[in-house]
Length: 78
Length: 291
Image (cartoon, rainbow over all chains, first blue to last red; front, side, top):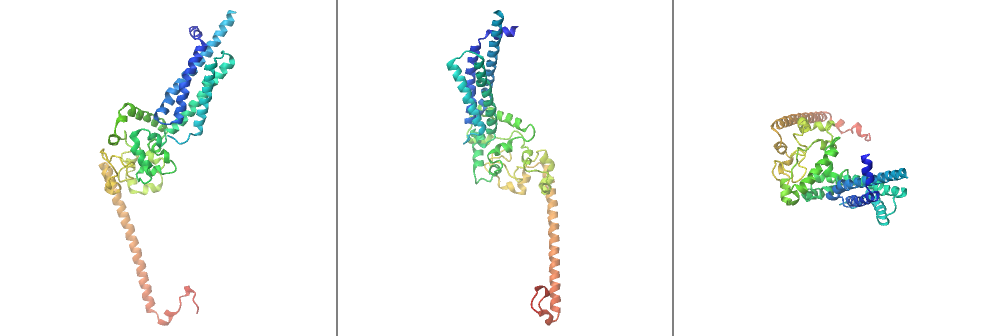
């Protein structure tokens, strides 16, 4: 399967690292929008912040998927 | 900016703090990707960020309904200053002093009423943000802002009627309401036109020109008529003529009643004068005096 091959090619640890670095600004923007509820923080928090947060979670899911499939492949080879 | 953070805001900040702690721990300690690590990261990258996103969205949406939020763009400085002025008699200031929606007065009056009112108002707000940051409004002086600012479409009277219902019988008893019912429904005539209930802001433009204050005619009959289409003006005059006739008839009836009472009193006095003096000195039975 092409998708499976594509996903297993990505390192789970690298994906988790990307997810973490994407989540940090996303969370900070959300916190900023609560502490300073003016136009720019609220807009950023609800658009860019949430977009980055979703991307971070997708990276995490991909990492889990990649790791699971890699383990399956390894056990099949053994 | 708000003086206090709401309960949901605290939930958001706590969620952010916990998520950041989990992420920070993972980035510094770099543990192996075991089941336990994955579950911990599920909370750090999924559950707590989702909680932060939901609570910050609700808090943010709520914040956009506050007058201070509207005032965060300098274009609105004069409007917010007027609404905050405890001595101002403009309609916006009087609504701002209403305890039921005081700090939300901009949003309550300018948000479209109905099922799609909320999302459409938010979309319209996005256009305001675009105009402010990319449309050149950010660099305008206060004078230029006041001269250029205008409503994109006629103000929807439904926004007034969401509180000031027009279905009560008393509402239709006002001749202006009765005469202009159709025009008010179709927004051809605004409740807040000069002379009706007056302009909403002291900077409202009665004739497209920049006004610095309410025109003196704002609350007179002529003031009402000045901003109306010809057909509506005719209807209004007819309603006023009918009201004047009705009032004249009532006054006539009242005068006649008074006249009748006077005549009755005169007749009674004449009768008393006509009766013998001895019986006139006797105390009336109703007073209950001594015999």
